Image (cartoon, rainbow, N blue to C red; front, side, top):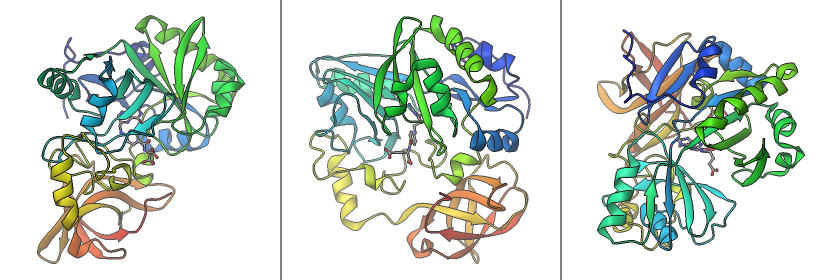
Length: 367
Ligand code: THG
């Protein structure tokens, strides 16, 4: 593929300087912002992520800040997950849907206070929908994109690295909880979360000016831990079954089709804009759903388009993300499969742009 031309519309991040000095070799675009995808190689990055610790520029996980007396009411309007039990200090993975029940985004919501939330978005322009809803319903809220850039620290040695920079208190953070921790006199939101299954943290860096000082501090503190710049890894996240909005599900899918039913309480999520539509389709249940797919390959081309999943001459689904797994010795994939063929063990054929391979539906991801 040819190069993509940089411009003001393709936003850099507070950490881009560090990413480039570390030798980034490929970027993608996410929320109109640069997101590194490869440093050494996808395979070498994968091996290192699973054995050491990496610092990830995930500033592209932009925040939609919702502030004001109607904040909690508005966030509940956006999602079929019941938010009544959510406390300040918690993060929730929140499917967000439109009035048809179609997925608009799958963010992490950070509840800072009853009247102040950050919605840490995946790759869609959710800000516009949220502003439209707030205006249309005359809600008493302020909505904008603050100068907040997540920096993730991921990998088995992330507790040790984070404790060196933020103090031993970070070790006590539970999964999907956050606390406020000091760095150079600045209070930062630090959560135990992140887009990998290797464990780790996300620092919500407030103020672009402190981005590179924090980057350097992490790199220096972790020298003996072999800390490196990294990024969400295309092999590891498929093994772990972490979905990618726009790839594995779109506005054409309900959360149930996406396999996110466990993050929905449609019956009790009173106020959710897509609630009626989801209740209607929930009666029948989905007729296609996300599945882990094992591919009988020894190498795979880039999955840059949906790959048809065939049962004989009939298409019964598609693979939307795939990679060759060094640790499992097979192709690992995320697919959307029709009900007639979604049972564990079902044997199919996947048609990539290059060639066809045997594929098998699995019960779980590789975790
Ligand atoms: N962190 C933050 N913002 C984000 C992401 C993130 N915004 C974009 C994107 N990632 C949103 N998508 C996801 C997808 C999966 C998870 C988080 C965000 C995730 N899922 C876990 C799982 O499925 O195992 C845990 C979910 C749970 O149990 O609550 O972490 O990564 N800030």
